[in-house]
Image (cartoon, rainbow, N blue to C red; front, top):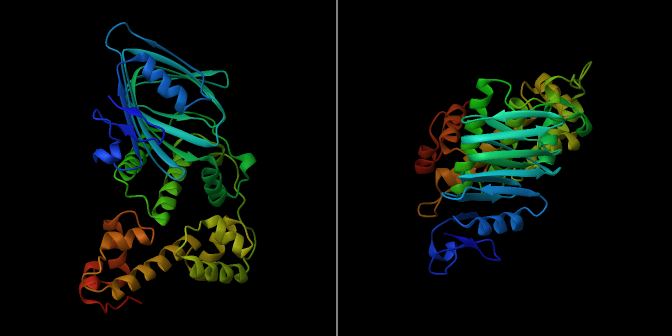
Length: 347
């Protein structure tokens, strides 16, 4: 059984913190207990603004959880055995969604009740709701609401006041599978601590926000987007590309680029496509690939440079996808560049 000290690290049976014992990477915390009082005290300390009641069965109760966080991106696995819980979830500056692996959930939200069973997906809306769970096991991902609102504006041009969720379950079976794939990607990355690089973490947050908007019912699916009308002005495109060239090493977003270009994100995307046959986000990706290419060329034997390190440094979470994109552009795998240098880019 693990408790938690003031630093947020769990303690092993011999009294050492988990980090000292070498049991877990630094950003991961874990607790497992059969004591209802210890479980309740842990939850009350961690979620003080979430009023809750838990009814533990006389025999067989167990509570277990594991969680990890980097920046505004977090994941948590919860499992209740022989217990039913009720929690009042207040409005929050973040969005939580998860996958139910066992047991049942009931969501009360805006006068409706939604039941979610095993293998279902569930959104915890940021404007608050009531949740009831029965002997459940689930995994969740949390992302800051301001990230989601920024991505919604970049994709549609809608203001924050126009973006809200209208349902708590995926719009389709395909959507549910898509969300589960996103959840698994984030959980693997946070638990293995492979999302620590700033550009990779920003990309992962973008993936989660985009997935939430694509999977769970919300107003971006039904409200007319602010699309550009008439000819686009080339000057914003030049400003955008100059900004990208100067800041490719930073975790900039499409909103940042559009602000530098002095236009809305959808207008910028359309203008870049019209005048440069690309988009601002695609140009940023290519600029970062160019920097990665230069880093591979400059690598010296024994200096610790690897494909994974370079890919993460320049915002590519998956070394395999990075390698495929690199080969598409430069005509050879990045490993060959790292070994021999002097590749020739395709024109």
